[in-house]
Length: 231
Image (cartoon, rainbow, N blue to C red):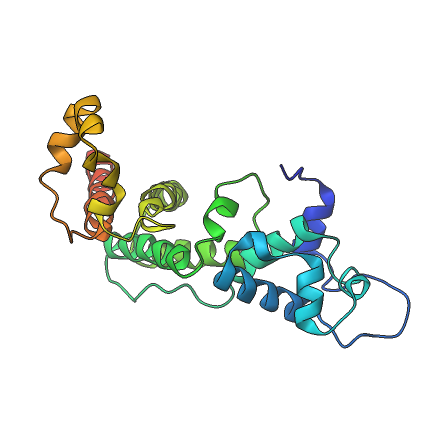
């Protein structure tokens, strides 16, 4: 487990290069992080090692340590780099549409980078790019009249839902609800989990998990609407 300390915060929020000795290698932290993300996207996070990364970059391993202390810290930089730039949420005139777009943008991020989901749900500091995404959404909500006292709670609520709801679409589930419940094809499991089997029997073989994501996302936003209406 990654133990967080002042060093991780300084890595994300401090200077963009570490002091070191020797001839400059031509590497930059941004280049190292981008290559590590490419490896993780293609082969998974387990394939990201300082040795493998150095080989891909045509560099010595020790040259990498001038920019990144180690793999745990590199993973923090990799994750935060995924949120560089503007958040992918269409312009909207109502806070409901802003939050729906926020939930979908989170889903899109993890479908594109499945390795990042366990990083997001683990213990870690927030980086500057992630903070930028949240700040942009809060600005959108402010512009369409979401009360300040509710804005951050609403953003985090949708974020928490999306992190859990996207999980069935990641990995070897195949992206359909039927694939997610494929263990029920065994008669013994149907007997063992009768209520789940009864519900799953109504799911078509090609029903996408996204349908369930959209259902849940809308219900979360409905709940926020009821809360604001009651106030």
